[in-house]
Structures are given as structure tokens and as C-alpha cells.
Image 1 (cartoon, rainbow, N blue to C red):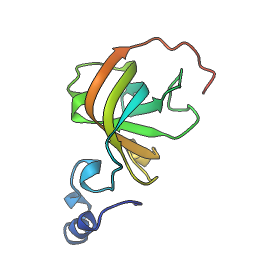
Image 2 (tube, helix red, strand yellow; image 1 turned 180 degrees about the horizontal axis):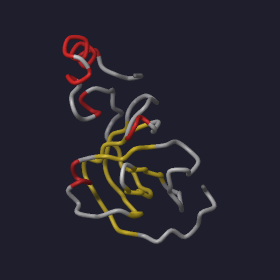
Image 3 (cartoon, rainbow, N blue to C red; image 1 turned 90 degrees about the horizontal axis):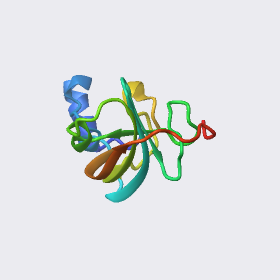
Image 4 (cartoon, rainbow, N blue to C red; image 1 turned 120 degrees about the vertical axis):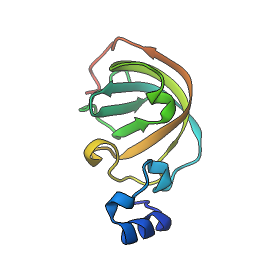
Length: 127
């Protein structure tokens, strides 16, 4: 588990994996807060973020696989689909296994949404 903090390792050591705090930022080193822009594909068991200049975003899209999470996203009330999103958030400092079934290279936690709107994909050339 690259990037896991010593504090979290101690909790797991004495309490088992169930003792692992919820929330990636509670257990893993995070980068500094910064502004992000791109496409977000929200589906059952999938929350893929494809940074700009992406014109398509699917589970199979080439490039770093980034899981997008955050309370501001879950409370946004949007259903499944593709969204153009701009937000302020923090990315995991090290490549690892994040998101559903650990299938993603990084996780970004969105702390503040700037814009979020549904879009229709214009190209699938970056699959």
C-alpha cells in the first residue's frame, strides 16, 4: 500500500483491516490542494476522472486511472453519466491501488466544486 501513513499502519496492526479509517486522506499521503479540470464518469462502482484536455472518459480510456471522490460530489445530487467538472482537490502522493477494488492508480478528493455540468461526449478517439 504505497503512501500509507505510519499512524494508519499502527491502527491496522492492532485493530485489523477493519480499523482502517474511512477516507483515503485519513491513511495516505496526499499532494497539495490544487485546481483540476476535466471529465468525470460517474457510474455504479466507477468514478473515473480524466483531466483536461480529455474529450472522452471511460473505464478503458488510456492514461492514469484516477478515482474521483469527495463529500461535495456525493452531495451534488447528480446521477450517473459524464460531467464536465472543475474543482479544487488533493491527489494521492503516490501511485497505488485506489477506488473500487483498488483498480485505480490515484485518487483525487474534491474539496470544492467550481463547476459541474452534464455533457455529451464528442469523441471516443482517446479510448
